[in-house]
Image 1: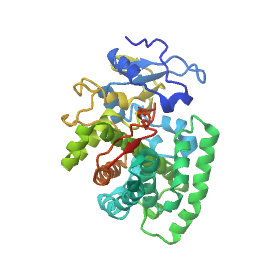
Image 2 (image 1 turned 45 degrees about the vertical axis):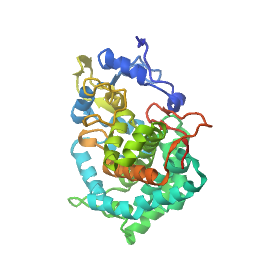
Image 3 (image 1 turned 30 degrees about the vertical axis):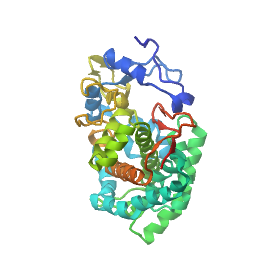
Image 4 (image 1 turned 180 degrees about the horizontal axis):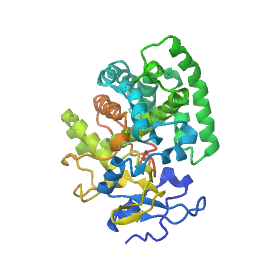
Length: 394
Protein backbone atom coordinates (compact mmCIF):
# COMPACT_ATOMS: atom_id res chain seq x y z
CA UNK A 1 0.00 0.00 0.00
CA UNK A 2 1.24 3.50 -0.85
CA UNK A 3 1.99 5.57 2.26
CA UNK A 4 -0.08 8.76 2.03
CA UNK A 5 0.95 10.21 5.38
CA UNK A 6 2.26 13.69 4.72
CA UNK A 7 0.99 13.54 1.13
CA UNK A 8 1.94 16.65 -0.83
CA UNK A 9 2.20 17.55 -4.51
CA UNK A 10 5.79 17.38 -5.76
CA UNK A 11 7.89 20.57 -5.68
CA UNK A 12 7.16 22.84 -8.64
CA UNK A 13 10.52 22.18 -10.27
CA UNK A 14 9.65 18.46 -10.42
CA UNK A 15 6.25 18.90 -12.08
CA UNK A 16 7.37 18.40 -15.71
CA UNK A 17 8.77 14.91 -14.99
CA UNK A 18 6.33 13.79 -12.29
CA UNK A 19 4.46 10.46 -12.37
CA UNK A 20 1.64 11.00 -9.84
CA UNK A 21 -0.83 8.26 -10.74
CA UNK A 22 0.35 5.72 -8.17
CA UNK A 23 -0.38 8.18 -5.36
CA UNK A 24 -3.66 9.29 -6.96
CA UNK A 25 -4.83 5.69 -7.24
CA UNK A 26 -3.97 5.19 -3.57
CA UNK A 27 -6.09 8.22 -2.63
CA UNK A 28 -9.01 6.71 -4.57
CA UNK A 29 -8.52 3.37 -2.84
CA UNK A 30 -8.66 5.12 0.55
CA UNK A 31 -11.85 7.13 -0.04
CA UNK A 32 -11.04 9.53 -2.87
CA UNK A 33 -10.53 12.68 -0.73
CA UNK A 34 -7.36 13.66 1.11
CA UNK A 35 -6.44 16.76 3.07
CA UNK A 36 -2.97 18.15 2.45
CA UNK A 37 -0.69 19.07 5.37
CA UNK A 38 -0.41 22.81 6.11
CA UNK A 39 1.86 24.56 3.64
CA UNK A 40 4.63 27.03 4.33
CA UNK A 41 2.94 29.90 2.49
CA UNK A 42 -0.33 29.86 4.44
CA UNK A 43 -0.31 27.44 7.39
CA UNK A 44 -3.94 28.30 8.27
CA UNK A 45 -5.32 27.42 4.81
CA UNK A 46 -6.91 24.01 4.32
CA UNK A 47 -6.61 22.21 1.00
CA UNK A 48 -8.01 18.94 -0.33
CA UNK A 49 -7.42 16.71 -3.35
CA UNK A 50 -10.35 14.82 -4.88
CA UNK A 51 -9.83 11.83 -7.17
CA UNK A 52 -13.11 9.97 -7.74
CA UNK A 53 -15.29 10.68 -10.75
CA UNK A 54 -18.64 11.17 -8.98
CA UNK A 55 -17.16 13.68 -6.52
CA UNK A 56 -15.24 15.51 -9.25
CA UNK A 57 -18.31 15.70 -11.48
CA UNK A 58 -20.44 17.07 -8.64
CA UNK A 59 -17.87 19.73 -7.72
CA UNK A 60 -17.47 21.00 -11.28
CA UNK A 61 -21.25 21.20 -11.76
CA UNK A 62 -22.03 22.95 -8.45
CA UNK A 63 -20.71 26.47 -8.95
CA UNK A 64 -22.63 27.80 -5.94
CA UNK A 65 -20.77 25.59 -3.46
CA UNK A 66 -17.48 25.34 -5.33
CA UNK A 67 -16.35 28.70 -6.71
CA UNK A 68 -13.97 29.16 -9.63
CA UNK A 69 -12.65 32.39 -8.08
CA UNK A 70 -9.56 30.55 -6.83
CA UNK A 71 -8.23 30.50 -10.41
CA UNK A 72 -7.85 34.27 -10.29
CA UNK A 73 -5.55 33.81 -7.29
CA UNK A 74 -3.33 31.23 -9.01
CA UNK A 75 -3.04 31.99 -12.70
CA UNK A 76 -4.69 35.43 -12.69
CA UNK A 77 -1.45 37.37 -12.18
CA UNK A 78 -0.14 35.95 -15.46
CA UNK A 79 -3.31 35.88 -17.56
CA UNK A 80 -5.15 38.91 -16.17
CA UNK A 81 -8.95 39.11 -15.86
CA UNK A 82 -10.01 35.69 -17.06
CA UNK A 83 -13.19 33.76 -17.55
CA UNK A 84 -11.88 30.80 -15.51
CA UNK A 85 -12.14 32.86 -12.31
CA UNK A 86 -15.76 34.01 -12.64
CA UNK A 87 -18.99 32.52 -11.33
CA UNK A 88 -22.72 32.90 -11.84
CA UNK A 89 -24.27 35.64 -13.98
CA UNK A 90 -20.98 37.45 -14.49
CA UNK A 91 -19.44 34.29 -15.92
CA UNK A 92 -22.49 33.64 -18.11
CA UNK A 93 -22.31 37.13 -19.68
CA UNK A 94 -18.56 36.90 -20.29
CA UNK A 95 -18.84 33.40 -21.77
CA UNK A 96 -21.67 34.47 -24.08
CA UNK A 97 -19.48 37.26 -25.42
CA UNK A 98 -16.78 34.85 -26.55
CA UNK A 99 -18.72 31.62 -27.20
CA UNK A 100 -20.18 32.80 -30.52
CA UNK A 101 -16.69 32.92 -32.00
CA UNK A 102 -16.46 29.11 -31.60
CA UNK A 103 -19.67 28.31 -33.51
CA UNK A 104 -19.80 25.25 -35.78
CA UNK A 105 -19.57 27.23 -39.02
CA UNK A 106 -16.38 28.95 -37.84
CA UNK A 107 -14.77 25.64 -36.86
CA UNK A 108 -15.65 24.14 -40.26
CA UNK A 109 -14.02 27.11 -41.99
CA UNK A 110 -10.91 26.83 -39.81
CA UNK A 111 -10.59 23.15 -40.78
CA UNK A 112 -10.50 24.00 -44.50
CA UNK A 113 -8.46 27.18 -44.34
CA UNK A 114 -6.03 26.50 -41.51
CA UNK A 115 -5.98 23.09 -39.85
CA UNK A 116 -5.59 20.88 -42.91
CA UNK A 117 -3.07 23.15 -44.71
CA UNK A 118 -0.93 23.57 -41.57
CA UNK A 119 -0.63 19.84 -40.81
CA UNK A 120 0.04 19.15 -44.48
CA UNK A 121 2.85 21.73 -44.65
CA UNK A 122 4.48 20.40 -41.48
CA UNK A 123 4.38 16.83 -42.75
CA UNK A 124 5.86 17.95 -46.09
CA UNK A 125 9.00 18.91 -44.16
CA UNK A 126 9.07 15.62 -42.22
CA UNK A 127 8.29 12.98 -44.85
CA UNK A 128 11.55 12.96 -46.89
CA UNK A 129 13.80 12.11 -43.92
CA UNK A 130 12.13 8.82 -42.91
CA UNK A 131 12.60 9.68 -39.24
CA UNK A 132 11.62 12.58 -36.98
CA UNK A 133 10.98 13.76 -33.47
CA UNK A 134 7.23 14.25 -33.73
CA UNK A 135 7.13 16.48 -30.64
CA UNK A 136 9.78 18.94 -31.79
CA UNK A 137 8.84 18.82 -35.49
CA UNK A 138 5.06 18.37 -35.40
CA UNK A 139 3.04 18.56 -32.19
CA UNK A 140 4.94 21.56 -30.75
CA UNK A 141 4.22 23.47 -33.98
CA UNK A 142 0.81 22.27 -35.18
CA UNK A 143 -1.70 23.43 -32.52
CA UNK A 144 0.07 26.72 -31.83
CA UNK A 145 0.11 27.55 -35.56
CA UNK A 146 -3.59 26.71 -35.74
CA UNK A 147 -4.53 28.92 -32.80
CA UNK A 148 -2.34 31.76 -34.10
CA UNK A 149 -4.05 31.51 -37.49
CA UNK A 150 -7.50 31.46 -35.90
CA UNK A 151 -6.77 34.49 -33.72
CA UNK A 152 -5.13 36.39 -36.56
CA UNK A 153 -1.52 36.32 -35.38
CA UNK A 154 1.04 35.83 -38.19
CA UNK A 155 2.06 32.17 -38.37
CA UNK A 156 5.70 33.21 -38.65
CA UNK A 157 5.51 34.23 -34.97
CA UNK A 158 4.19 30.91 -33.70
CA UNK A 159 7.49 29.93 -32.05
CA UNK A 160 7.41 33.08 -29.95
CA UNK A 161 3.83 32.40 -28.91
CA UNK A 162 4.72 28.82 -28.00
CA UNK A 163 7.44 30.13 -25.66
CA UNK A 164 5.13 32.73 -24.12
CA UNK A 165 2.38 30.14 -23.69
CA UNK A 166 4.67 27.75 -21.79
CA UNK A 167 5.94 30.50 -19.49
CA UNK A 168 2.42 31.77 -18.75
CA UNK A 169 1.14 28.26 -18.05
CA UNK A 170 4.00 27.64 -15.64
CA UNK A 171 3.87 31.13 -14.13
CA UNK A 172 3.43 29.83 -10.55
CA UNK A 173 6.71 27.91 -10.99
CA UNK A 174 8.68 30.94 -12.24
CA UNK A 175 6.94 34.20 -11.36
CA UNK A 176 9.33 36.57 -13.14
CA UNK A 177 9.34 34.59 -16.39
CA UNK A 178 5.54 34.22 -16.29
CA UNK A 179 4.98 37.95 -15.75
CA UNK A 180 7.48 38.87 -18.45
CA UNK A 181 5.75 36.57 -20.94
CA UNK A 182 2.36 38.01 -19.98
CA UNK A 183 3.54 41.58 -20.58
CA UNK A 184 5.27 40.65 -23.83
CA UNK A 185 2.18 38.94 -25.19
CA UNK A 186 0.01 41.98 -24.44
CA UNK A 187 2.56 44.36 -25.97
CA UNK A 188 2.54 42.23 -29.11
CA UNK A 189 -1.25 42.00 -29.30
CA UNK A 190 -2.11 45.66 -28.61
CA UNK A 191 -1.41 46.98 -32.15
CA UNK A 192 -3.29 43.99 -33.65
CA UNK A 193 -6.31 44.76 -31.46
CA UNK A 194 -6.18 48.44 -32.41
CA UNK A 195 -6.07 47.53 -36.09
CA UNK A 196 -9.08 45.18 -35.79
CA UNK A 197 -11.13 47.89 -34.08
CA UNK A 198 -10.99 50.04 -37.19
CA UNK A 199 -10.58 47.33 -39.82
CA UNK A 200 -12.12 43.92 -38.94
CA UNK A 201 -10.65 41.09 -41.01
CA UNK A 202 -12.98 38.20 -40.17
CA UNK A 203 -10.57 36.42 -37.83
CA UNK A 204 -11.35 35.51 -34.23
CA UNK A 205 -9.59 38.59 -32.89
CA UNK A 206 -11.91 40.79 -34.97
CA UNK A 207 -14.93 38.92 -33.61
CA UNK A 208 -13.79 39.30 -30.02
CA UNK A 209 -13.08 43.02 -30.39
CA UNK A 210 -16.57 43.64 -31.81
CA UNK A 211 -18.52 40.96 -29.87
CA UNK A 212 -21.62 42.34 -28.20
CA UNK A 213 -24.33 40.68 -26.11
CA UNK A 214 -27.20 42.70 -24.62
CA UNK A 215 -25.31 45.90 -25.36
CA UNK A 216 -22.19 44.75 -23.52
CA UNK A 217 -18.70 44.32 -24.98
CA UNK A 218 -15.48 42.87 -23.63
CA UNK A 219 -13.37 45.34 -21.67
CA UNK A 220 -9.74 45.58 -22.72
CA UNK A 221 -8.60 43.76 -19.59
CA UNK A 222 -10.97 40.87 -20.24
CA UNK A 223 -10.10 40.78 -23.92
CA UNK A 224 -6.39 40.43 -23.18
CA UNK A 225 -7.15 38.02 -20.35
CA UNK A 226 -9.08 35.79 -22.74
CA UNK A 227 -6.33 35.95 -25.36
CA UNK A 228 -3.68 35.05 -22.77
CA UNK A 229 -5.83 32.09 -21.81
CA UNK A 230 -6.76 31.06 -25.34
CA UNK A 231 -3.28 31.02 -26.83
CA UNK A 232 -1.69 28.83 -24.11
CA UNK A 233 -4.79 26.67 -23.62
CA UNK A 234 -5.46 26.26 -27.32
CA UNK A 235 -1.87 25.36 -28.05
CA UNK A 236 -0.35 23.60 -25.05
CA UNK A 237 -3.16 21.22 -24.13
CA UNK A 238 -3.78 20.02 -27.70
CA UNK A 239 -0.04 19.69 -28.26
CA UNK A 240 0.22 17.34 -25.28
CA UNK A 241 -2.74 15.11 -26.10
CA UNK A 242 -1.69 14.95 -29.75
CA UNK A 243 1.75 13.80 -28.65
CA UNK A 244 0.25 11.07 -26.46
CA UNK A 245 -1.95 9.88 -29.34
CA UNK A 246 1.02 9.64 -31.69
CA UNK A 247 3.18 7.92 -29.06
CA UNK A 248 0.51 5.23 -28.67
CA UNK A 249 0.21 4.77 -32.45
CA UNK A 250 3.98 4.45 -32.83
CA UNK A 251 4.29 2.04 -29.90
CA UNK A 252 1.31 -0.24 -30.58
CA UNK A 253 1.28 -1.62 -34.09
CA UNK A 254 -2.00 -3.48 -33.63
CA UNK A 255 -3.83 -0.30 -32.60
CA UNK A 256 -2.18 1.67 -35.40
CA UNK A 257 -3.13 -0.88 -38.05
CA UNK A 258 -6.74 -1.08 -36.85
CA UNK A 259 -7.20 2.68 -36.96
CA UNK A 260 -5.36 3.01 -40.26
CA UNK A 261 -7.70 0.45 -41.82
CA UNK A 262 -10.87 1.86 -40.21
CA UNK A 263 -10.77 5.63 -39.81
CA UNK A 264 -14.12 5.63 -37.99
CA UNK A 265 -12.01 4.56 -34.99
CA UNK A 266 -10.05 7.84 -34.89
CA UNK A 267 -12.68 9.55 -32.73
CA UNK A 268 -13.06 6.73 -30.18
CA UNK A 269 -9.26 6.37 -30.07
CA UNK A 270 -8.81 10.06 -29.22
CA UNK A 271 -11.54 9.95 -26.55
CA UNK A 272 -9.94 6.94 -24.89
CA UNK A 273 -6.56 8.73 -24.89
CA UNK A 274 -8.20 11.80 -23.33
CA UNK A 275 -9.65 9.62 -20.55
CA UNK A 276 -6.56 7.49 -20.07
CA UNK A 277 -3.95 10.29 -20.20
CA UNK A 278 -5.66 13.66 -19.87
CA UNK A 279 -3.27 16.42 -20.92
CA UNK A 280 -4.63 18.69 -18.14
CA UNK A 281 -4.99 16.73 -14.92
CA UNK A 282 -6.42 19.17 -12.38
CA UNK A 283 -8.96 21.94 -11.82
CA UNK A 284 -9.15 24.24 -8.78
CA UNK A 285 -12.18 25.42 -6.80
CA UNK A 286 -12.81 27.34 -3.55
CA UNK A 287 -15.47 26.07 -1.13
CA UNK A 288 -18.09 28.75 -0.32
CA UNK A 289 -19.95 26.99 2.53
CA UNK A 290 -19.27 24.14 4.91
CA UNK A 291 -19.95 20.96 2.96
CA UNK A 292 -18.99 17.32 2.56
CA UNK A 293 -17.16 15.52 -0.26
CA UNK A 294 -17.17 11.75 -0.37
CA UNK A 295 -18.11 11.62 3.31
CA UNK A 296 -15.27 13.98 4.26
CA UNK A 297 -16.24 17.29 5.97
CA UNK A 298 -14.79 20.27 4.11
CA UNK A 299 -15.01 23.80 5.57
CA UNK A 300 -15.87 27.03 3.79
CA UNK A 301 -12.77 28.68 2.40
CA UNK A 302 -10.93 25.44 1.70
CA UNK A 303 -9.13 24.99 -1.62
CA UNK A 304 -10.18 21.98 -3.67
CA UNK A 305 -8.07 20.43 -6.40
CA UNK A 306 -10.21 18.21 -8.61
CA UNK A 307 -7.80 15.66 -10.06
CA UNK A 308 -9.73 15.01 -13.25
CA UNK A 309 -6.84 12.92 -14.53
CA UNK A 310 -7.32 10.58 -11.57
CA UNK A 311 -11.11 10.71 -12.06
CA UNK A 312 -10.54 9.24 -15.52
CA UNK A 313 -9.10 6.16 -13.79
CA UNK A 314 -12.09 5.57 -11.50
CA UNK A 315 -12.81 1.84 -11.50
CA UNK A 316 -16.41 2.51 -10.43
CA UNK A 317 -16.94 4.11 -13.85
CA UNK A 318 -14.51 2.25 -16.13
CA UNK A 319 -13.52 -1.43 -15.85
CA UNK A 320 -9.72 -1.84 -15.68
CA UNK A 321 -9.31 1.96 -15.99
CA UNK A 322 -5.50 2.00 -16.09
CA UNK A 323 -5.56 -0.01 -19.35
CA UNK A 324 -5.89 1.67 -22.72
CA UNK A 325 -8.81 -0.06 -24.46
CA UNK A 326 -9.85 0.99 -27.95
CA UNK A 327 -13.02 -1.10 -27.64
CA UNK A 328 -14.12 0.45 -24.36
CA UNK A 329 -17.79 1.41 -24.15
CA UNK A 330 -17.80 5.22 -24.50
CA UNK A 331 -18.68 7.08 -21.29
CA UNK A 332 -18.21 10.81 -20.69
CA UNK A 333 -14.87 11.78 -19.14
CA UNK A 334 -13.64 15.02 -17.56
CA UNK A 335 -10.68 15.84 -19.80
CA UNK A 336 -12.50 19.04 -20.90
CA UNK A 337 -14.15 19.58 -17.52
CA UNK A 338 -17.91 19.84 -17.17
CA UNK A 339 -20.54 22.26 -15.95
CA UNK A 340 -20.51 26.01 -16.58
CA UNK A 341 -16.75 26.11 -17.18
CA UNK A 342 -16.54 23.23 -19.64
CA UNK A 343 -13.83 23.99 -22.19
CA UNK A 344 -15.04 26.35 -24.94
CA UNK A 345 -12.46 24.98 -27.35
CA UNK A 346 -13.17 21.27 -26.91
CA UNK A 347 -14.74 20.83 -30.36
CA UNK A 348 -11.78 22.59 -31.97
CA UNK A 349 -9.33 20.42 -29.99
CA UNK A 350 -11.10 17.22 -31.02
CA UNK A 351 -11.06 18.34 -34.65
CA UNK A 352 -7.35 19.19 -34.58
CA UNK A 353 -6.49 15.82 -33.07
CA UNK A 354 -8.64 13.91 -35.59
CA UNK A 355 -7.24 15.79 -38.59
CA UNK A 356 -3.71 15.36 -37.25
CA UNK A 357 -4.05 11.61 -36.66
CA UNK A 358 -5.54 11.02 -40.10
CA UNK A 359 -2.80 13.05 -41.76
CA UNK A 360 -0.02 11.19 -39.90
CA UNK A 361 -1.52 7.81 -40.80
CA UNK A 362 -1.76 8.90 -44.45
CA UNK A 363 1.70 10.43 -44.74
CA UNK A 364 3.88 8.41 -42.33
CA UNK A 365 3.25 4.73 -43.10
CA UNK A 366 4.68 2.02 -40.84
CA UNK A 367 5.10 4.57 -38.05
CA UNK A 368 7.14 3.14 -35.16
CA UNK A 369 9.38 4.27 -32.33
CA UNK A 370 12.99 4.89 -33.33
CA UNK A 371 14.92 1.86 -31.99
CA UNK A 372 18.13 3.92 -31.77
CA UNK A 373 16.64 6.47 -29.34
CA UNK A 374 15.43 6.18 -25.73
CA UNK A 375 11.76 5.21 -25.55
CA UNK A 376 9.61 8.29 -24.84
CA UNK A 377 7.20 8.44 -21.91
CA UNK A 378 4.18 10.51 -20.95
CA UNK A 379 5.10 12.62 -17.93
CA UNK A 380 3.95 15.65 -15.96
CA UNK A 381 1.90 16.65 -12.95
CA UNK A 382 -0.58 19.38 -13.99
CA UNK A 383 0.09 18.99 -17.74
CA UNK A 384 0.99 15.61 -19.22
CA UNK A 385 2.46 14.54 -22.53
CA UNK A 386 5.66 13.16 -24.07
CA UNK A 387 8.54 15.62 -24.25
CA UNK A 388 10.17 13.84 -27.18
CA UNK A 389 8.81 11.36 -29.72
CA UNK A 390 11.56 9.96 -31.99
CA UNK A 391 10.05 7.77 -34.73
CA UNK A 392 10.86 6.16 -38.04
CA UNK A 393 8.45 5.56 -40.91
CA UNK A 394 8.32 4.18 -44.43
